[in-house]
Image (tube, rainbow, N blue to C red; front, side, top):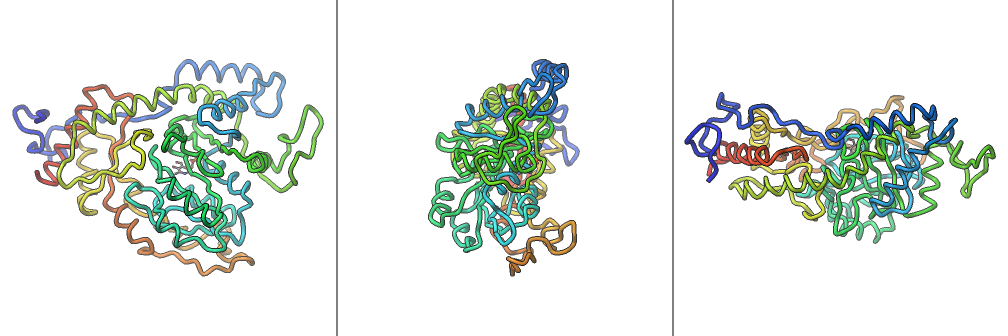
Length: 432
Ligand SMILES: Cc1ncc(COP(=O)(O)O)c(C=O)c1O
C-alpha cells in the first residue's frame, strides 16, 4: 500500500488538491522531449553554421551540408533508404502527398482523432479528407478503414499519436488489398517502433515533425522518409519549388530523372539542420529514459478499478511519452484530468476530448478563399459532408480519454509521486 502526501492517510483516501488538499508534487512537473536536452552541442553546431555564412542548404560560401547530414543520419537511425528534410511536419505531409500525386478529385482517409495539421495538409493539397473511426489504441481502426475506401481514395494517413504505434499490420493489409498508398503521420513518434520496424517506415512514406514539443526538435522542422526512389525524388522536387536546386550539380542546372512539376518552398535551413542533427544523436537516450520512467509508473499504479488503459499495439516499441487512459464517462475524464493537474502532474485530455472534425473550419468546409476548396473542385463535386456524430465510436473514446505525460527527466521519486497521484485521484473519483 502506498502512503504519501498527508501523513498517515492512505493514498486514495486523501483530500484531492483540487478540493483544497495537499498536492502530491510540491511544484508542477515540467515535461519536454528533445527540448529538455538542448545543450552545448546544439549551440556549437549553430555557431558553426553562422560562422560558415552558409545558412541555405543547397549552396553557400562554405557549405557545411548540415541538412544533408541530418537526412542521412535519420535514414540510418530509422532504417529508411531516402529522406528529405522540410520546414515543418505539415510541410513533410504536404510533400508526401505531392509525391503521391494527390490533389483535386482525390479522397484521403485520416483518423477522426488527430492533430488538425493532418487534415489541413490534405485540404491545402486540394484533396478531400474522409474520416475513419479510431480504436482503443487512439489509432485508425482497420475494420472501419475498410469501409471508407472508395475508387477516389488516393492515400491513407494512419497517425501514431504520442509515440505509440497505430496497429499497422492490419491497416497495411487493408491498404494493400485495395492498392492504396500509405503515408504515416509520425509527427509525434520519431524513433518509436512497431514489431521491430521504425514508425514512419512501414508505409510508402513517413512524415515527422521537429516542432518544439517533439522527440527531436529544431523549433520548427520536418522530415519525410521513403524507400521508394521515385517518391523521394518527387518529394525533394516539390519542397524545392519543383526542383530549383535539387536537380543542379555545381553551377549546372539539370532536369533530373523525373518529369518537372510545380512545387513550393518547404526547405529546411542549415541552422535547423544543425540542431536537428545533434538532437537526433540524443533520441535513443531520450526514448530509453522515457521507457524506464513509464515502466516504473505503470508498475506502481497496477490496475485501479474503473480505469482502462489506452491499448498499445506494441508495448515494447512504444516511445512512452505518456500514459493514456479511458474513464467510464466524459464527465469523469474531465474531472480526472483536472484533478491530476491540481496534484502537479502534466496531464490533460488529448485534443479537448473531441474528434478532429469538430474543428469549425472542417465542419463548415471553409478554406481561405471561401470558394469551397477541394469539396467543390470540378473533378470532385463531392457529396462528402461532415457533422458531429459521424464517427460515434471515436467521439465516445475521445470524450472518455485522458493522459499523463511521462518525461525522460523525471527522477525515481518523481515517478513514484506521479503514480501515487494517479492512485489518489482514482481512489477519490472511481472508488476502490
Ligand atoms: C499528428 C501531427 N501531425 C502533424 C503535425 C504537424 O507538425 P508541424 O507542427 O511540425 O507542422 C503535428 C504537430 O504537432 C502532429 O501532432
